[in-house]
Amino acid sequence: MDADTYVNSATYDVCLLAAAAWMDCVERTLLGEVEEVPGENGDNLTPRVHNGIRRPSFALTRPPGHHALAGQAMGFCIFNFAAVAACYALDRLGCGKVAILDLDAHHGNGHQAFVRTHPSICYASFHQKDAFPMTGLDPCDYGPHGNLLDVPVPAYSDLGTYLPLLDNKVLPFLTAFEPDLLIVSIGYDCLVDDPLAQLALGPQDFTAVGDRLLRAFGREKIVFGLEGGYDPDNVAVAIVSTLKPFL
Image 1 (cartoon, rainbow, N blue to C red):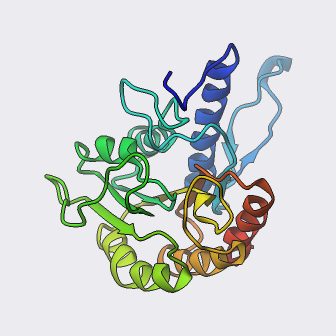
Image 2: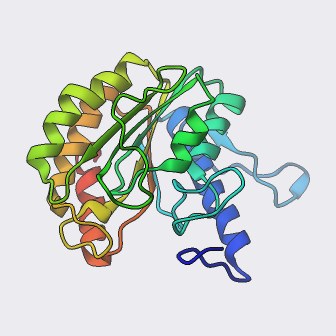
C-alpha cells in the first residue's frame, strides 16, 4: 500500500478477525463475558449470552490500526480498529460517550482525523516528537469540539516524564469527558529497546500506567487494544505489566 504497509492474500480476513476481536472486547467489558448456551432446535448456533460480569479486556491483534485513515492505509495499518470499536459501542451497545487513549510512540493520525468530527468521542495521545507520521505536534489543537489532546514528548522520555503528564494533563482531560468506555490503543514501541522509536519506558513501567487507569476508570469500562511494539520479548513482559493491576 506504501513503502511501509504491505498486504497479501490473507490481509483482509486477518483484519476482519482483528476488528471482530476489538468489538468482542467492547462487548465483554460493557456487557460481561459470553456464556455458551445450547442452540435451539438442535442446531450448532450458540446465542451470545452475557453473564454481566464486567472486566477489562485486551484485543491482542495485529496489524495495528491507529494510522489508518478513512480512505488510506499507512504506517503498517489497514483498518482503524479503535474507531470500529468506538462506533460499535456508541451505535450498538448504548454508550453515550467513548474516550480513546493512545499510548503508542507514534501519533495516531488516523484516530485524530476520525475523532475530530465525532463530538461523542474524545482522543488523547502520548507520542514522540518529530517521529512518524509528523503529526500531533500542536498541544493547543483541541479540535472544533474540544475533544482532542496531543501530548508530544521528546526522544528518550522515561516514566519520570510520562507520569506527571498522565496525572496532571491526560487523565483529567479524559475523566472530565465522563466517558462510558475507555479504549486504550496501547503501543509498546515506547519501550527502551524498540527499534522503531527512541523512547525509554521499561516493560515494568506499564504497571504504574495500568494502576492509574484502574484508579481513574475502574474495572468495568476499559478495553485495551494492541498497536505498535517491535521488540517481541519486551512487549510480552510489558503486556503482563499493564494488566497486573487488574488481575
